Length: 343
Image (cartoon, rainbow, N blue to C red):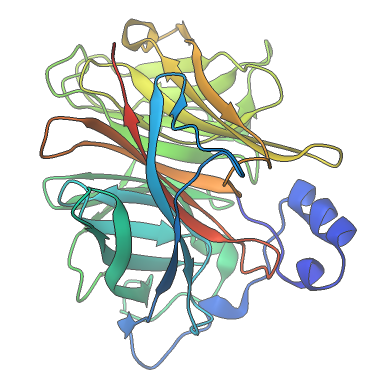
């Protein structure tokens, strides 16, 4: 889900109203004659997650560090989802303005994120190789990566499509997948924000799982589906409070970690991490699990949209998050990193 650029430049009230409306009007999708654009990214280190406090543990999550990213390029922004191609290092991502992005996270000697290198973007293209300039056709929100294939969930023109990964020349999709959830049940701007592969050794044997942002069934639960693997079928995720789902990734033990977001005029933006029990992710079930962490504007968060889980070289289970600034001067592109303790 994305929000308007224009209103943010006027007043905070207008920004809030457009945030709720879920409208995006970004000129960043205008095609460039150079398909792959290297982008200079400057960073400001974030050393404290809870603003003004030194605490590092937030339930089972330990804050490692973060980066606030800025660039002279108008294309940087709208970052909706990302996945590491190399654990904690090289990554691929999609922006809801219809761009692919690639880069590398650099860490210092203390294993804290220190910079972003080799960042570049390229527009999504049609079958003839031409950039697609209609926002509603390329509102990319979810991303999974496996075996050199990127699987992307799109809103507005609801679909799940697969692409061959080539950082120098991303082409049109070679396949569209049946996402099983009846199309009439998907809300226009509340489609598949989570696209992720299940645990390869678990019950779904690495199959694709998709979870919508806020497409609700008659019981108020969130539509989701296992769209390939040995146990294909539709399920739902229990909606907990006023939070919507923006991304997710399976953990090594088979549980599904979900990133969630809420917004209100009074409370502003909030984010939450919820651990969904892996055994509840099955056809016909209502999946649920505990909240691990919740943060509001007293913490270093923004419109948190993307999540990936990975294992550090010392064996630590890591969770990385990114935000979508909606190309607004009032929002930020953030990268945050946590250790998820299992004790």
